Amino acid sequence: MELNRAVSLAMAFGPKAGLEIVDALTSEPSFKRYHLLPSVRGDPLSKLGRFDEACAEFKRAASLTCNARERNLLLNRAQACIGGSAPLPSREKRG
Image (cartoon, rainbow, N blue to C red; front, side, top):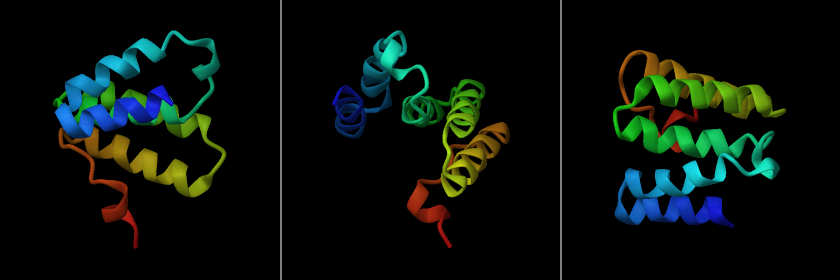
């Protein structure tokens, strides 16, 4: 629920607002192996121009997911960060 709130806040008030919520969740044991936490964290980081951190988060999310399509999407987002650009939203990456 808090992760959804973080996404909503980021959409409404900017990436920094959402990132504050997500950062607070990183210490929660229940999120340690949950791939969506680093995925959600990577998005505002990339929008804030913090590409190295975003890349690490997308790679971590990719390593945690069991879904091959999702892993490829996350690795593509990580690759975009290496080039110093914000990754495209997922709907634009689909074929």
